[in-house]
Length: 271
View 1 (tube, rainbow, N blue to C red):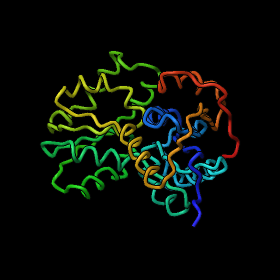
View 2: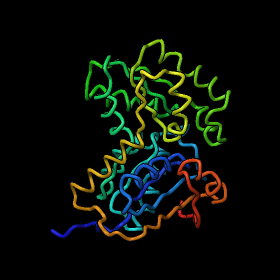
View 3: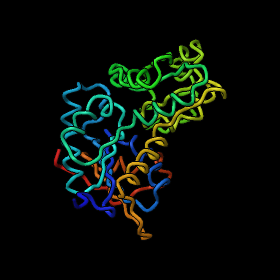
View 4: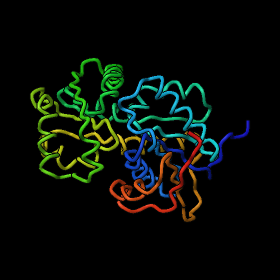
């Protein structure tokens, strides 16, 4: 049977806004020959306060758009969409689709020494219980402490990575983690890797921070290798960035997530 997807096709990545760019950064670092088509749903951000039905509808619309770009796989670089919509869109589409939850959970399960794992994420992600159920599937002995951290996203987008306000907020959010003596903390939102410095100081050096973006990049590579879809051509790559609202703010803030600026961000009016 002929391969339905081409190895030189791009990888589709989507998120509710900017946070998924941390996943793009890790994918392009691990797989420098790969092209990425990124969709940031900036007109409808945040996803963390919306219903499951709405998140499924948004995710279905975005995967349909990405398939117009002939992507060979899709990465759901949004913890809320991975929690609430992943299984639905995996059933609806034939393209390989991976979320950000399972790779991080696998890393946490093998990293914890005392079987005490913490999860910080948006309210919807925590409420879904997806992280907890996946951890228990791997190891029911693990005790999980969960905490919604809604203020972290605006703090990151404000660029307050090491601001005293951010430190105070982190200390408040992470009190239960310290009380529970977790030795592994899953950063369950793609904005949170930018707060690693503050989070690491608050919880202490003995706590392992699991960055889902790094783990997802490894999962993407494994899938492409297994399916024979790695792009081998040593040619310059050009990534495509799509947003559902005006691109100016995205272009201005993207440097905080990628470490470099992006140009020619296009507005997609299909959602």
